[in-house]
Length: 382
Image 1 (tube, one colour):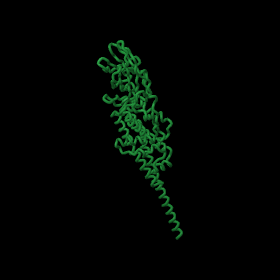
Image 2 (tube, helix red, strand yellow):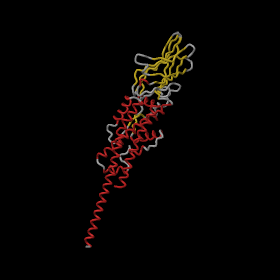
Image 3 (cartoon, rainbow, N blue to C red):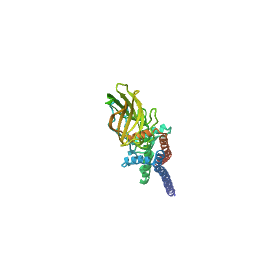
Image 4 (cartoon, one colour):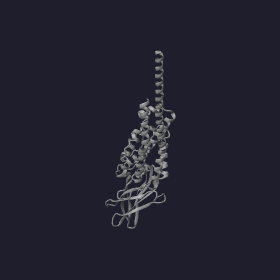
């Protein structure tokens, strides 16, 4: 009888253990399912984030401009498989923005710089801080291939579909981080050219000409720059990549014979007002009581990376007009990039940056839910 009772107790214990194990397994399965559900929710939100930001960009600029910017980013990242491999590019303007001394001109394009995902995190964090938005961009781990401890443990045992969903969500979130970083990078580089502009050349030429039977020396110096904000002039128009709208600052100096130099600072449009058949002259500055001079320019070509321009001065005296020319000068410069930097002074671009910060902030809730559920799963099941 005693043996039967002992056997019955043993069976009861086994049943309790089995029931407990089954309940434990069921609880863990439920907790794991919760993590998977939160990952699916995150992916749903993240899937639309890049398109939403592109739409924001188009509203602030134009559909064509936004499409070109996002297409360029996609082209750069054709081979990127993980979020940590995403990159973007800009220019390193260090050493290219100091005002020129007489005789200097730009001879090459600034070096292209690649912003890695790690660079983008720092820039995006600066943008969030500037916006007074309390985000910890690093917590998204965009530049890392490993995840937070609990989430990493969960993904290690999850099915391939769930892992793929999380990686896709992270990839799209980090794309938006890169777009925000690009805006911040351009906004910071705007400050590099805001005060002194971007110098193109500072050239000097002189010639002897005959006026009323007398030889006179006429001289011209031009300090040509691109300014986003012009001192004592209207600001650069918003360009949105339309290089023909660029205005240049012709800081010009004229000298007649033994007279002192006379300065004229003028702001002039480029291709809109000038073409291969047309030279534009303006200024009509009085050098002496009987001598006047005009500054004239002719733009032959402007592209995203160079400008071909001819600048000369026409001196008028005693019924005669003669010119001194700097010749035709080809200047390498990243005009497409500089136009983007100039646009960052516009309130609409600053508002766009704030909106992208908000887009990222809206994803933190769903991301936080994933981490919270993963931690609950790890605490109970691993």
